[in-house]
Length: 208
Image (cartoon, rainbow, N blue to C red):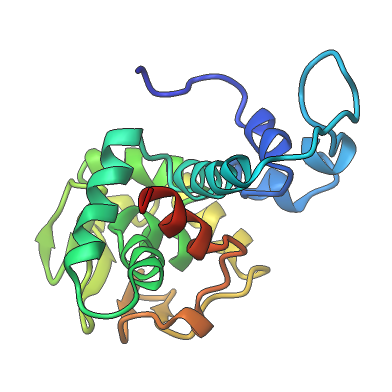
């Protein structure tokens, strides 16, 4: 299946919550979800009651779409988390939080995770001083992320940094805006992750 290329605001409306897929627009009065919280389609405001499976599927879709992952990528990540020590659902959220594209967005170097993926693949960031162009790269505690010198004047990155000052940043990420550098301090624990996803439903879905 091809990657979704339509209006991302429809995704938020479909999932019944803001997934912050469109950067600064999601925090403004222009947000389409705030204007039309009902699901897309001809039957305005109609949300049918979900079955147990439906609730589990929606939680999976919500998390998958937040991080712009294809089904195969998401399932592979889940299988990796199953083999890790600890609780599978919490491992899943923690691993996704430590993806490089998520870190770039969280630190404020990109206006959205989608934009972060594009900037990474074009080679605009260093991890521990080495260029990394893989959005799914998993960060380890102590890893530092920096913007390459010629990109520090980029309007996209500077505007994103300005906008990010109005967002709450989790404690496990630290940033030095003057140096265009960020650091991950520790592996995120569940109580530090602000995701509204119910990871237990995702585990139940894959356990069938």
